[in-house]
Amino acid sequence: MSKVPDSLKPFLKEVSASLREKTFQKLILSRPLSNNEQVPTKVTVRPVLIQEETHYQWVERVGPRELHQNLSADQLIQRVPSILGTLLGDARLFTSEAEICARYKGRGHFQMHRAKSQLANSEPEAHNREKNYIIPPNEPCPFLAKAGIMSTDGRVKAPMYHKFRQINRYLELIRDLKGTLQKPGSLRVVDYGCGKSYLTFALHHYLTVVEQRTVEMTGLDQRPDVIATCTAIADELQLIGLDFRVGQIVDLPIEGKIDLAVSLHACDTATDEALAAAVLREAQVIVAVPCCQHELRPQIRGESLSGLWKHGILAERFAADVTDALRALWLEQQGYQVQVIEFIELEHTPKNLAIRAVRVAKPSRESIRLAKEKSQALKELCGITTTWLDRWDGQRVEAM
Image 1 (cartoon, rainbow, N blue to C red):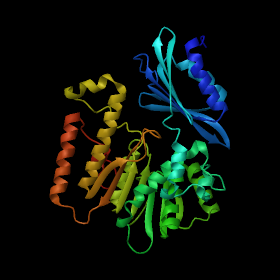
Image 2: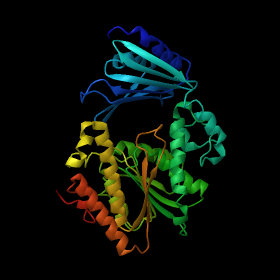
Image 3: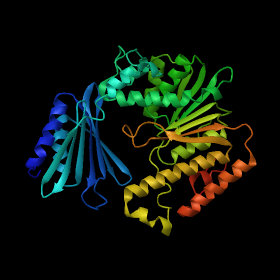
């Protein structure tokens, strides 16, 4: 590693001190110093708990990809100066006490600035609002303890507070729609692409413990090891009405109507598969939080949009927004009333949109026609010929 500039050493000392004193909350490196597409556009570092030990998750964004690596404190200290001032020019360190910024000015010189941290009051503010949380802190919650988010005595672990807030925000999205789920008897719920399922367990907890409903709830995922782990946890916690199945979203035989369909961070067209599967089963409510979206990016063309393609990050964001807009319009064509809303603050995740849809008993032909026209106009503007949902014929996707 090349010699660290003297003007950068004070910033590195702040990083080291925050790790040593356990005040570190987040580090963001940004502002590429070249146009090389292989250079990361942004790096985000957060503390994570792995087997009760604190590590630091290094998330490096290169084009449309995100590369993840868990580092020790010493490895993080070594990694930062290898990229700062050579590949990226800005650094923002958030601690529980301050926000420290370092900006590369060229010729080995960094300029530092110190201010009160935007995250300094995150935890106290959360405590002030405890009574508003659907799952409150400082009260034992077995599934959160099993997920490593909370201790067995109910204390939310500091590095996991952002996950705790994310879970509660997710449950707020469901709570806002409970007026549409008032049918008597058991609720039929499907989580498409459930993954490690801490949000699946959260939804089961909300419906059965908070709302006192009986449920028939299924989590679906294609990874057998993940499903085995989730099943073991559900069995250990004796969660009634919750089961997990292995398989592809579009191939799994979920028969009959369902009341609530959710899909959280299903990658790329897996979100479309979940929407299609939910519509096929006439889901009364659909809540989807999309993840990475790559299908439409290569299709988008048009001279009027050429200015976007000079900047990869703008093109990527635009493609993601167009994808979600077309998804919303497709759901309207299927007879749903749709909202696209903020899921969680950008402070916590760049994937911060949720698509929330409620099935309309008798949608008007005019509303369906307008949704089709808007969808077609948007596709023509962007040069898009077809989407996964366009090719879905009610049971499967037609070949292009």
